[in-house]
Image (cartoon, rainbow, N blue to C red; front, side, top):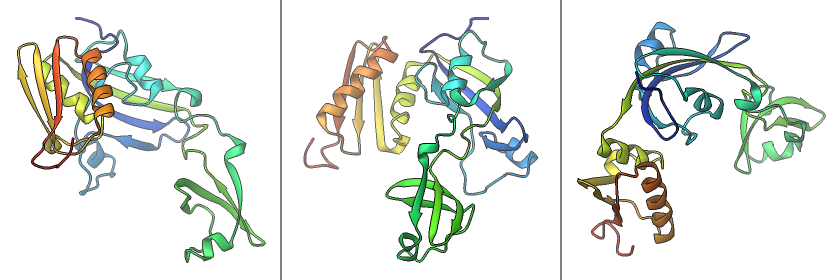
Length: 225
């Protein structure tokens, strides 16, 4: 069977666990969620499509998919430096409790807070001072991922759709018209011309079969492009 290489598009299911505690922190499959009593009815489950090497998923996981085979299941160990990073003491901040009082927040250890757009976790509260940890909650953790590589994607239109979804656009926000080696993508959301040019360059890099690509904004939805 053909081995996966950089820039291949593949569809995967996975379960991510913290190695020491075996605690699941992320998964994609609905049955796995129900089996582990983690099912959330308002969450959308299903396999994810990635382009290998593009870091659409955690870098330490992405790197290990090269040379693997579609249709097989693998387990990967990921060190902190290739996962969510090592803990950085510089990201432990001392903040005056008045900052929280102004927002009607009662500081308590373990509470997650948003300070100036940065997410952090309160570690301690004493004498009017609050220590907030802005490290990722999974920093310094060794991880284990169980991955099922469901299939390699070879369909050109499906690759184009995946490229657009990598930008966090849902499928109802664009259309793809494919004709042999050319394609036209129409956006229902406004995207400035320089950004469209960057997107076009990236798509043609990842889907080289497309020799002629147009990316436009639907002028019926927006007065300017």
